[in-house]
Length: 377
Image (tube, one colour):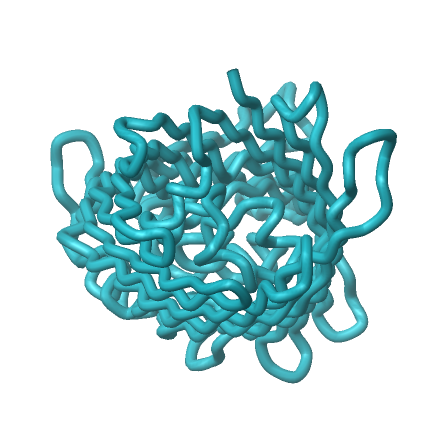
């Protein structure tokens, strides 16, 4: 009976807004944190270049900019501090949120494959407490750990019928799992055995997306739309609940009239509420608006290679909150990028400083270091 009750609790923890005292973060409530499927280059501009950047997994039309075969890999450690009134708690997580490959099919058609995090929920929290057994109070160490993510596997085709027009379409397989474990270890381990339980649930879904870019000598205007299909959560072969992958609609505009420089703005909306039926009634889900402004500017040379300097700002609503309180995120970013190996490789780096707020006394500050490497054969 104890195991059944604990397992039900663990499953509920996967699909509900876990209390902060057990989780130690407000960025990964509910089903997790949306990294945005943006490349290091885009993050350096605050996300403003997300829909005109071929490395990002948002607009299938712009993978034409690869020009030839390429492979891209991204890593993102994040260091965050949760503030509950005057109390602070530090934690960190290492993400690998984006891998992209591109291959030319014809001179005007490009095939792109990507694996990105739609939602990421990995954390571990350790607390001390006392457990009462009979009339005895025993000190314990309690650990709560979640490891997993909902991933987006995208297969995209882009067509460049005119020099000023790019169109694209993509199919998405949404898949992944969450593994939650909880343990209670007694200080007096010689008399009392540790209590440990785990639960794993998987996600299966699909989506389709389209995109377009119209460009001229000094401008670029893009639009992209992802239509979410069915999404289910399962434990083993048993379906727990069904909902839909969130839709996303995004527009961006960029000024490119200065050599080596792009100044961009982006506005996007994700309908996270389409996941409503996937979790418990305690989950507070908010449709998210995402607004960003930024620039990618030609800087000094590193040897024979120019260095691109980037900066931007971003404001958005995270999808999951506490009770009736939404979580807002404001961030500032900076970055740089350059070519290596005679143009066969590129290195990008970005730093993002974010502040997340959920009510008057709950906030979280975070610093993310994003590193991206592109390699061409």
